[in-house]
Image (cartoon, rainbow, N blue to C red; front, top):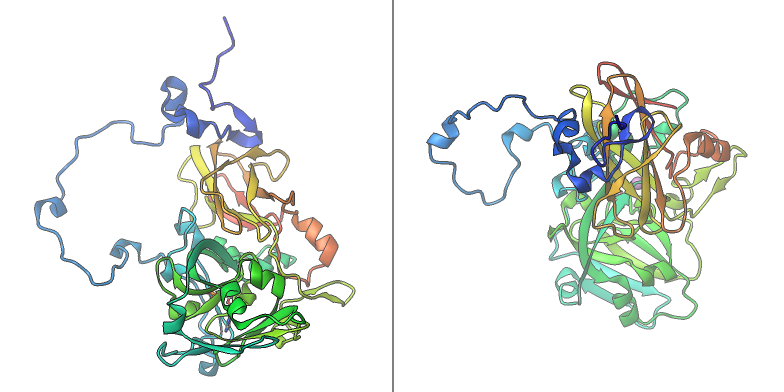
Length: 427
Ligand SMILES: Nc1nc2c(c(=O)[nH]1)N[C@H]1C(S)=C(S)[C@@H](COP(=O)(O)O)O[C@H]1N2
Ligand SMILES: [Mo]
């Protein structure tokens, strides 16, 4: 008698039931006897009844579409400020546990605002480019619309995203609470280089200052080389005009760089010879080290990933087959590898990466898992095309201590208990 052979793709490739990602290619889930063990559908196919919605005519059209009323829990999460004077100051978070794919719908893109959302009339709004230029220029929204446009899918991540993981005790939070200050959209607008070329760059210019029209005048210094490389003056977000909370009528997209630099409600760009040292790059968004010194101008967001499903609130319905899925991203380029562990990092299985895999955009990963009903600790670890590997929490803390919580890109862990309930843990 030969050894019992599992259907292709069903062999475990790492501890605690992680299966080979080839499962997705070879349709092994449905492949006969071995596959039946992993079946997730009802055992007996009962005849379908005819529900009432099939027996009557449906509803009419909508001028602007809305999600199904059954999806009313799929919302951004935020804590309303106690003081009405600071209304709109803070952030709201994307519900990644309830989404899939790589694009964040506009209504669910995270929001981070330091002074509330200004109510800008696009007919009156102007943008100024000045400083070390040959010809200072002013643009209206109407004039910007006449320039050549470009689109790119890019993530924006707040530098403070996941900062709660530096807390000594694991926070009782779900993926939205921990990692919800990250979203990914298709952004369309005019390349900043086009506008700077028209203004004529003085050779003494090495940085730009970008300033917003909100009550906080959030402003950041951006290296000129980056401004000329891939920065976009955006007018559209996922095909429609940018939402007020995301920068209407015009914002900067600074692909892969710290979220704060993606200046919303853009009103001014000044070419300068050195960084301006604004409040937003000195008192905030620097990385405080145990020595009491801080790193300034740490601009790209480094390689990172998160498991969105299963995750707290999206618990495991029963033992057997489950897909572990999540997002990976790097501000330095493309994701080349995501590994998943079900045993707290003792062993790793490569996840399948879903196309398209784009530079400075999120990449959706998926790994097949046969849960045996016992305790497990799920983790994901991403690698990018510069060779950088997502660090462990211990590595980051050894380097920065517990206070430097910006750009916190450590591997994060979900513990699974025997009931299939998930929780954030420090593993
Ligand atoms: N003018 C202005 N730009 C801004 C901000 C702001 O408060 N004012 N917030 C910044 C921060 S901290 C982040 S993380 C991103 C968030 O972009 P979003 O709200 O579209 O997600 O916008 C940045 N641009
Ligand atoms: Mo931010």
